[in-house]
Length: 111
Length: 110
Image (tube, rainbow over all chains, first blue to last red):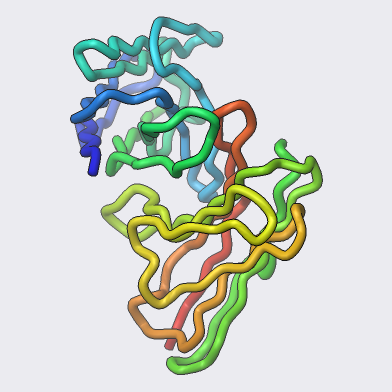
């Protein structure tokens, strides 16, 4: 099956810093999502981005499907950004198959 | 909020007992999914459904069964729970190819 690798596995930053999280995947995809899992375990949708670039406030994401990677940018980090960030990919369109998740990047923002 | 609820939210049970987890959605989504999350792993797909009475296996389906007798409910059953099934279980729906997740059920098998 498809492999998803995320880097770095852990990241500790000071409040106000910027960060870039990377997701590499081993095959073509037609679904790519970024999630934030907060300290209470809730999975929050950040981006649905099988290709292209999107921005939402301090967060933005870019997926280069032909080169099989995606990047999540977090600018001006806040302590509430702490948690685990997951990249997940899917093969088929229309929502038929499930997502394959990476192991996540554990981000800690220190005040 | 994609209108997904899971019940129970927490459960402690003993090895060998049957357990059923429920996922309920209110927005008539066709596709529903069950995942499990364990330390050091992302989420892994257990089973999914693409309509009433239509289900298929995912990556880690051994020891689990599912049923979907109506659009709004997707049930996950552990016929005889084992300690290796201690995990957090998430239900998801798909809306225009984007998946949204429920709050999760924390299951402990002693």
